[in-house]
Image 1 (cartoon, rainbow, N blue to C red):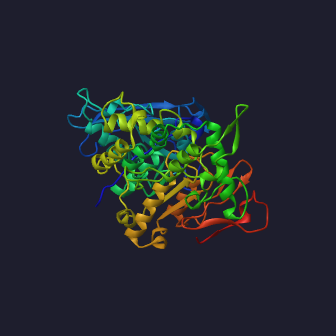
Image 2: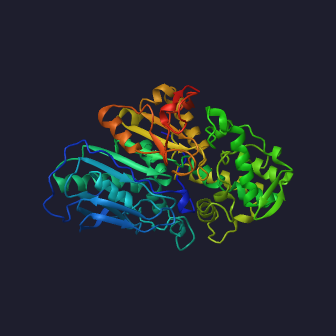
Length: 523
């Protein structure tokens, strides 16, 4: 089986990666309270050794979480008392210490397990999503993969001798999520004296990448995988996100924020009405033919001063939208979607996940200045990344036949305005799966992709974000009810997302702010 590209990313601003806490109606019978919160005997996964098992009683009630670089503060109410069991693993002579946390509601367990994914260079989330899982009747599990919970730190990937720490990279790429699934099931079974009935994955960004890794490499780990904004084809993506800064530096043109905004708004205005309604959203940026040169000479007000858009500005924007190219002008990867915010990828020194990838994993020089990259150097790094890491930390093997045979179900939503992981990568992967497994109709029997028009990375933006995608996955897995749409909302506006390749179109009548005014149609 081919093992392709991997990984994920997350935004440098909390506003770009909102915390999504999805509740699920409890349909399975609740379990009686466990008698005590105590350590249980844990079976070590193959190749691992158990270093310690610790248990801590958590009283529940109202649980609050401070903000992180990627999430706003969160408060969860009415949480039942639960037991948190932390298992620490190590692998041979690697010297690693991998923590796996399992949360177990003392009352109301539904027989389900939910594994929680990470963000950027953090492998798991030990905060609000794990507690939300408890509230919803799941046992929860997450892992740190033995690396820091600091999101953007990549220093762990280098040994003191300046070489790649292969065991830790293996943990982060594939091994630790699989081991967390095994440990989570084992601890849950021993705590409740009953096997897990259904197991689910829930993640976005890096968490989305991890979900695809599980479906590809360990198809029996989860019955259902919710993997949103996934950074599949990581080896390409992690370099490609630096392209906007390379373009600006090489062209020696640095458009002001207001100028970038003017191009964004012009593209939206040009392509907004394709879905039958004007609402400030480009539903398929990849099919938007707006030419940035049409804005040349336009006057833009910037901080009270009038600025004229130049041909150099337009050329920079054209290249950013077109996407990375090699030194011969051949396209390497998808660019920023038309209609998306330029800020996160044009602000110096560039998207932090990509900067860290180049500095640590490719150049092995933490102080390497990515701002000095030429077009040729960029193309060389792109090729190096694919050559060295496609099989190591790749998550884009299109052969999901084992996952399909195991009865697994996969749901993904991707924002068309995702400025951090352009949707083109996920669309490419989906097309590869269709070629491998017999076309869109057959693939939709177990894997459904939903494009979310106007939605940014993992949520936010002008568009509607799914309100209960995990609940839809549970219905599909446990009741055979494949989601014909994913209900989504933004404030008081609702709109259902359509399974790819269908698109949402306004019916021509009715309130444009109400989902019933739209229908899914072939494209």
